Image 1 (tube, rainbow, N blue to C red):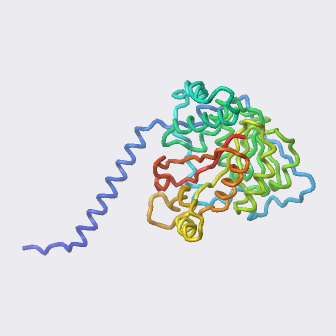
Image 2: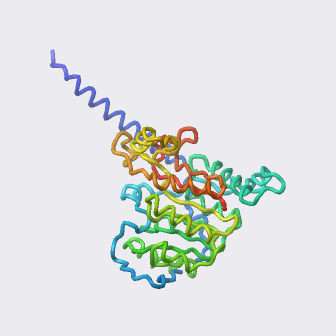
Image 3: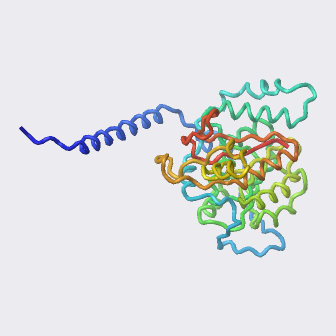
Length: 336
């Protein structure tokens, strides 16, 4: 009679089979989904070159990295964002624009009407409720004159925006150019002539180049401390048109921040999304950095302006924003 295999061997074999089954199920689900690529489906070849504009009075070493430089996104975040095009069919929402505005009362302020539309539009995207939809949302609102992105990093999100948003002028504000961004800028000269403008400098040194009420959309993704975010919101909000979309990245906290917040009288942190695990394939592994300063600054500023602030889900369940299936960081947004 042959020797029996140890129980550990059976457990190991079962574990491997479980991994393979899960992998093939996920592969099948992915294969059956129609993936929308904004760069292929919504690109307008008549729009868009890269113009270099250096902020006056600022000495900038574009080769130097800086803690105040743009988004402070971790390498893991950038990898997660690599295939971030939403699985979303714009034609499914053709009637949403008219229907959503019927929700607003007669004589309601413009910002309330547009905010209702924003929330309805993003909610209609389901699991693809994401900052990737901002470009298409702005098209629906007819906001296509000018936009600004504060903190560009490698240019991943800027590429999504210029590929989906039919904007005439998209201003990038970045003090230090990464190699990846330089590569994209070179390509955009051909793909989007006269559309992309690079402003080399920090957000606080570039702001005075633009008049008040100039932008349709401003995306804040520069310094992430409370002081830096609060200053950017104060400096750039006047540059936004009434009815324009104000938004920013990294509206999420770590579990540690949530626990500490509850213990120190900051219970509101418990109501904000979790940033998620550093590796989406290891839900119980190390978690990503949380951005309590960003949350606090955005919440306080929206309240001060009397505006309703919302945030994207980036794959999270609406009823459970702590769902780790969404591990791209949410963005906050509101209408001026």
